[in-house]
Amino acid sequence: MNGRALAVTMRTPGDDVELVHGFLLTEGVIGGREDVLEARYCDSRDADGRHTFNVLDVLLAPGVPDPHADVERRFYTTSSCGVCGKASLDAVRTIARFTPGDDPVRLSTAELVELPQRLRAAQRVFDTTGGLHAAALFTADGELLAAREDVGRHNAVDKVLGRALIEGRYPARGTVLMVSGRASFELVQKAVMAGVPVLAAVSAPSSLAVDLALTSGMTLVGFLRGESMNVYAGAERVLDAAAAAAVNGGGPDLP
Amino acid sequence: MNGRALAVTMRTPGDDVELVHGFLLTEGVIGGREDVLEARYCDSRDADGRHTFNVLDVLLAPGVPDPHADVERRFYTTSSCGVCGKASLDAVRTIARFTPGDDPVRLSTAELVELPQRLRAAQRVFDTTGGLHAAALFTADGELLAAREDVGRHNAVDKVLGRALIEGRYPARGTVLMVSGRASFELVQKAVMAGVPVLAAVSAPSSLAVDLALTSGMTLVGFLRGESMNVYAGAERVLDAAAAAAVNGGGPDLP
Image 1 (cartoon, one colour):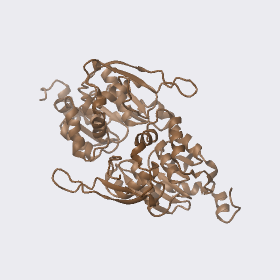
Image 2: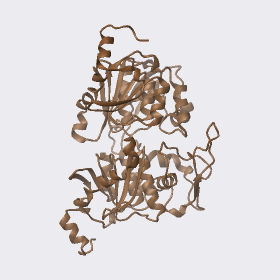
Image 3: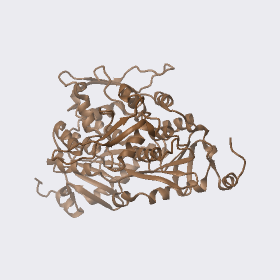
Image 4: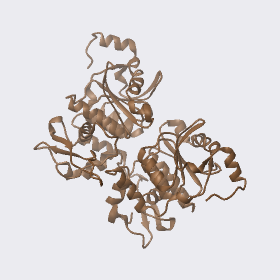
């Protein structure tokens, strides 16, 4: 970043430019696609002189604050390691440029229960390894916008949200982020930072993740498996099929 | 640590003294129980004056090198984020005080397939939340030495290995570490650092985890589910039931 080391992550190679965009967005370093002037592989080589494709050079646009100035505060307080939960919640509130609280999107339970199998169908590397996490961004109608796999679930989410940013979908209004594992605090943070109003996870959320979803006006769905789900926050966005049909069929605008 | 901040982790409260012992051992800060002079909660309080029980003060014994001197190298290179895999492998080789390569323990497949359900039976919080990882240390005969749950699987392993250290079981010769999720590079690292000769995981290993297990002479078992498993490294320690009975029944000493 601007010529100095900013962050290192263990990731599955591929979609690295998306990864870096998503990471910078969801950690609050950039506030839009235009904040990145250039992102490309630098000429890093291993002991045998082979190009590693493991280092990305990012140049921020003029006027974008250099994150090195407060990198410790920024990554320390928001990435999985607040000394207390309240400090972590406050940090997200401080760096978030907006929250998805006013997003009027509504989803039916019938649509939601379809998402895990659509995510699973997009997991090509999992088919051969059984070892990668996955994330996907859907429209409220269940259309797949992007799906990515990575050994780290945070990276999978960053790649999906970076893709959305590059495509001009920021804030990602009206979307659902579906993840293959648990709904951690950090994943809710990333969704909030990208303006995603609904996060759905196959497995459990943490209590701090629920707190952040409630604070941010986000809808958080966990244990989305088979025909069932738990809605931990923002339940007003989850409609049963009949109500959803009424809304989508031209019912009154929702507040 | 010696009055200065060393590390912050998002963890499930409880067994915190074990957690700190296991963390310091598996990150190479200490080389034995006697290297910790004192580990206790400090008087940290939240905004309302309540004791948080979220901060531990650790005092190292005289003569133990202060890790702050090279904290960046230490945690940067070994914890989940080597710029390249080789650097990560080299870092572990540098800080490991010994490797479990010469541990003569042998296990039968019949014993191994019992471990996941024994681990599952010890997961009390998972029963109510479905949201925690777990790790357990067993003897080669399948006796449970310790089982711990945590929102982070690395913490669950640190708690189990810290418990073993406090009980004087270091190096943890002749044991099997069983984990509920994947076998990451970091979990293999932690097992190596604690002298555990066998790591078994319910899910997949990463390629770097396999590399480290091979380099360290450790046995690595993945996808241990139902009646099947994959053995990725150190397969000579995994015997079929008949061969195991011959060994355990007083057969010749193994080299």
